[in-house]
Image (tube, rainbow, N blue to C red; front, side):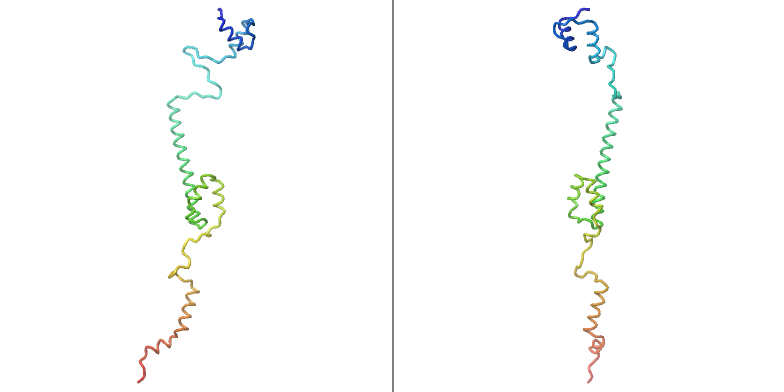
Length: 167
């Protein structure tokens, strides 16, 4: 078999030989050994190491399951965030008005924010109204108010008012 001038020039370039160098059959075989494998008619090219051939339908099914799994995981993480922040509000660790701030912080740094929320002391934010008018008084305040009333309006005075005046 005879090589064309272009084929010989390509082989010389691939082998790093000068343009006027003679090529031996060993040189040509070395160039072929270094070349990329080409699929012959009816034969598949060898599969590179670390690669696995998979049926297209199986691969597509796997891709759908992976996408569904990623979506479910995102929902789990979002639920954990929302539940942790709601618990911090419920226990008085943070104010309800700061929910959005804590949500944004969690989205940026979830582990750090979770640790901060866990370290906060419960009960720092009041969960019920304090000192509202008409609200229940403490037992000490109620007893003190009753004593003041009794002092100002003695029971015998109240009875005297009800008795008819002597004629």
